[in-house]
Length: 312
Ligand SMILES: [Zn+2]
Image 1: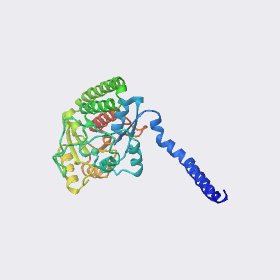
Image 2: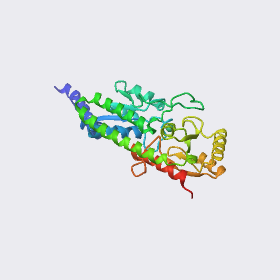
Image 3: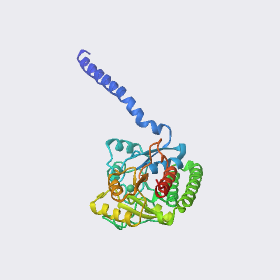
Image 4: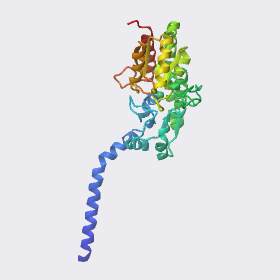
């Protein structure tokens, strides 16, 4: 008997340590599984605008999480270790596609069994006209409400495939959301349609408004084609200064995820105003003016109209 005692003691110590370790791990593990405990589909999106659309269609059946936070630069984003943890909890991943999120490669490799939904599938693609990305699809299709409807339909289909028992629920929510998007489209058409003919040039930092400009008959000008390449070279700045002077553009704009410093150089050289902050690659935070996709569209139109027509 006696010679087994040390083994029993060792076993007891091991068991006690294991228990302490288990106890210590508990709160963290509880946090990790909290989302799945509710039976909701954990839907991860690459940025806030898609996450908002997923949330609108998914309602209380979906926990919609955006990897990038409001205000984050989304073209050159680098996933954090925490993003990989988030990804490991996901049931489904939504991304824009069209070369916007090349940074998801490693993240996707870590979750090979999670379906990836490309929400821009089927949009009428506009192509980048200049610079290093000339000829490639312009990824910002959501800035057209008409194309945004295609995003919603792709999200609806993916959620139905993920949880067919909620099909009627997702269909009803998608339909009512699509009607809201159509209503905003009509509002934008009326509002932007009233811009005077000589005030219809939209000058921004990134060439992210091609779809919006095309829908509502604006002429798009920008400092650089896409955020992930060289931004604000002397040639780009000189080109825009020339355009603003030649077309007598009263106001120029920059986006919430971009430093307006370069556009301020244009302002200084031309006498045009800085017309305000546009939201395109990210929603604002909750308290801001573009906290949902629909608010973002309305805020964009209002900012453009005020900037281009205000006389002060
Ligand atoms: Zn962008």
